[in-house]
Image (cartoon, rainbow, N blue to C red; front, side):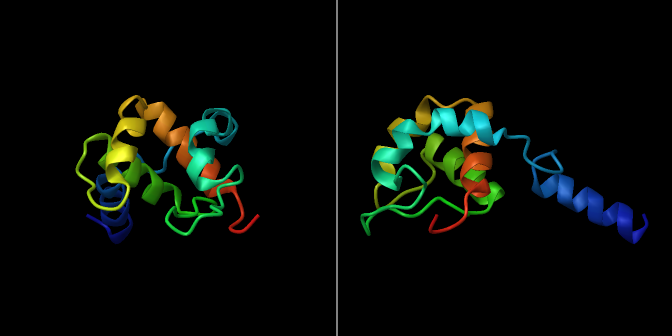
Length: 107
């Protein structure tokens, strides 16, 4: 294997078979109303116990939402997130992640 081929194979493996997430930020924005209650309408929380989502890395958000959905992520407000993430489809997760990743932190 060449270095380039090996790098591409590693990226695909780490991304679960996808080179990049395929979320649609516009679709994510339309699905984010529930998130706004804790994380702010622009992804910036006004309450210190809830993290800001604006500007987070897309793959991180996908990973976090999947971990909440499977109840693998624990601590903090995980129990609340388990219930909210339970009804999200794979596409919902990718769309929400794309939306919040597209926002400027602190916007």
